[in-house]
Image (cartoon, rainbow, N blue to C red):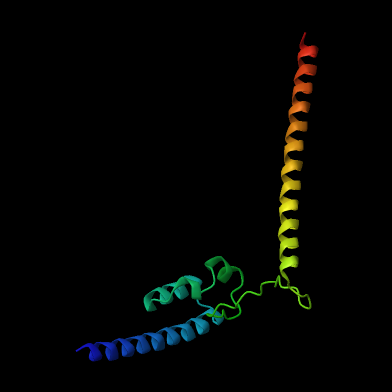
Length: 134
């Protein structure tokens, strides 16, 4: 019983993927022809295709001959923080951590001084405004 269910679910998945591919091919033809974008959306809805596979409606209206969207997401290129050609030792790790801590302390000190300066300027302005109003 369990094996039959697995086989039928695989068949359902395969037939669903085939119908989705057929619908996508049909939608490509519809997009390149002069049919309305709303009918393209309706066909996509009837076939149960996710909205993500279609471009936004405003894009279809503005650019009726859009390029085909790729369904797969491309991996993002992230910059590597690893420094090639440097020897990583315990001392270099300690130095790096100390540098980071020094930067944090400097930022905290700068923020404290800036707040202090702002408070002084605010009291000076209030004193000037009070002197003008008298």
